[in-house]
Length: 460
Ligand SMILES: *[C@@H]1O[C@H](CO)[C@@H](O)[C@H](O)[C@H]1NC(C)=O
Ligand SMILES: CC(=O)N[C@H]1CO[C@H](CO)[C@@H](O)[C@@H]1O
Image (cartoon, rainbow, N blue to C red; front, top):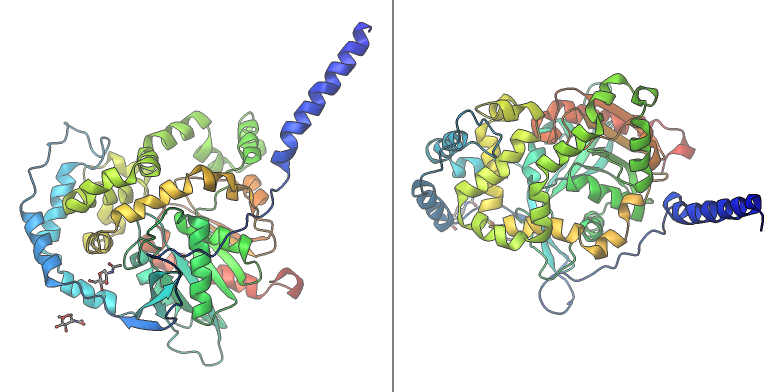
């Protein structure tokens, strides 16, 4: 064989091998089949399908025990000089939080606050699932639009409560109003936890589809951030005929092709995106070192949730430090440089402690953290949900400046094939609904408005 034909054959081999390797990355894998499993103890039984009203009413014992633990915790380790929040939550800040908890925070009052919304439980696939369900006050001449709001970790249904009055009250210039359903994820807050492995985001998607069906909703909108955004993504892929539109804060694409594109775009980023977005993700080394710095908890929870859970279930001050540290760093990247962690700039300590209490009163931190282990299991990973685009379901993204993961427009297009709404917000972080209830509600209204006005063939 001559030299030229050798080169030719070699090029063929390389091209063949290259496309063999790349092709599977370019094509969309089939939608994984998701079974309707039984997650409760024992064998599946015929289920009580009733929807029961419930009031949050924590027993006196739990509150006395909490008081005792708050008053008798061991002295905290002094922070290093000038450490701010760079070594984790600063214990001076924690002192302030615990002092507020002991002297100003009144759980019975907070129960009244939480109970102003109607709470329910219903049995689904062996688990008692808790949710808040609020109908609009006034509906004359308006279309009532069902909306499922899905929280993540370390949040709870609490994050959405301030948005409910706006979402369920008619707004000037809108011809629709929402009827909202806000569940606690299985293993979170007041929902039961699975007793066997496998409660991953797609399993939760099935449960929430069944919850909505139980309430008589077969066509509805869905919204989610954090794990909620993964769950609503899966719902949109599995149930496109039920989902009228999907709105996410934390729209994020994590496919091999998207990552390659991000890498290639780094050569000349301003060719691919607006300057303000360039600063958010480039240089990539800055973005990756941020991810490394802030994702230790994720690795821990994805591998040994039960070990760290022992300590967090035993110590309310430890639990508060662990949870509220995230409300500092994830709300604003710069708050790590503040002595007081910035928390009261966007939240009140009382509201933040409601969220901690929702983890404490039912000791749900361990079961909540297990979601990471299930979502990072090889079983779940092999289903490759990240690579499933949302095809026809109209999609909307609230893109916050301080979100923990940022995907620029040219990357989002890959996953959201019918993206009808994309809006950037400065000075907003990961917990958009909790942090900015008005802005958040308005963005959801704007999104649904756009979808409702779409020509028929673009709608679901
Ligand atoms: C909570 O439970 C206690 C004791 O069972 C009862 O006396 C009280 O009325 C309940 N409160 C609410 C708000 O249901
Ligand atoms: C799942 C679970 O343990 N739920 C309990 C959590 O706390 C509330 C309030 O005390 C109880 O009513 C639930 O039964």
